[in-house]
Structure formats: C-alpha cells, structure tokens
Length: 126
Image 1 (tube, one colour):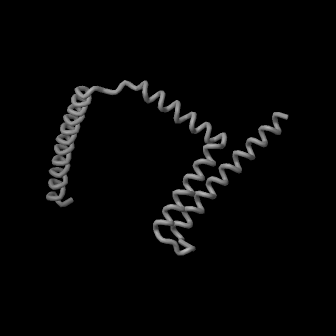
Image 2 (image 1 turned 90 degrees about the vertical axis):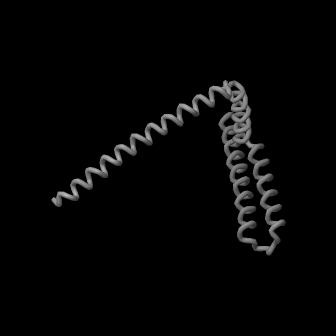
Image 3 (image 1 turned 30 degrees about the vertical axis):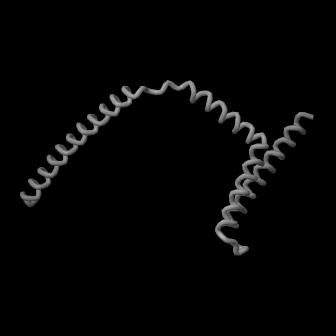
C-alpha cells in the first residue's frame, strides 16, 4: 500500500511540475510570439497570470511545500546572523582598500620591471 501511495505522490508531483512549467512556457510564448495580435498590456497581464497560476500549482505540490519550508528555515537562519556594526564595516572596507592599493603598486612595479626587461632585450637584437 505504501508503494502505491509513493507512486501516486510521485505521479502527482510530476503532473504538477509539468503542468506548472507548461503554463509558464505557454504564457511566455504568448508574450513573445503574440499569435492573437494582443496589445502589450494584455500580453503582460497574460504572462503575469500564467506566472501566478504556475506558482500556485507548484506551491501546492510536495516540492513546493518543501520549497516553502526551505524559505522559512532560511529566514530563521537569517535572523540568527550577527551583522557587523557600522564601525566594523568601515574598518574592514579601509583594510581592503589599503590592500588593493598595495597590490596595485606591487603590480605596477612588476610591470615596469618587465617593460624595462623587454626594452633591454629588444635593444640587444637577438
């Protein structure tokens, strides 16, 4: 019995997924291909309606339920993050800026050295 239920759930998931993707693709196709000669307003409304219907069908599926659970868990974890203070952000940005300037000066010196070396070799006419 449990295998039959699993198969039914799998088919239901596949049907919901295929249906939501099909609705989404059709609404985008109507928008871009415009087979009915609609104005831009109606094309946008059809596309938005298709997007909403596809999202509702997806959310009602088991995969959509797992996605909503993931979003809720993500928001909970986001609240646990300790964000840096303004002072810490300014200090870190300053350190990064100084590091970038030091690396830029180093690369400039290396480039000047290689330029000098290439000019020296080209004057020797090997």
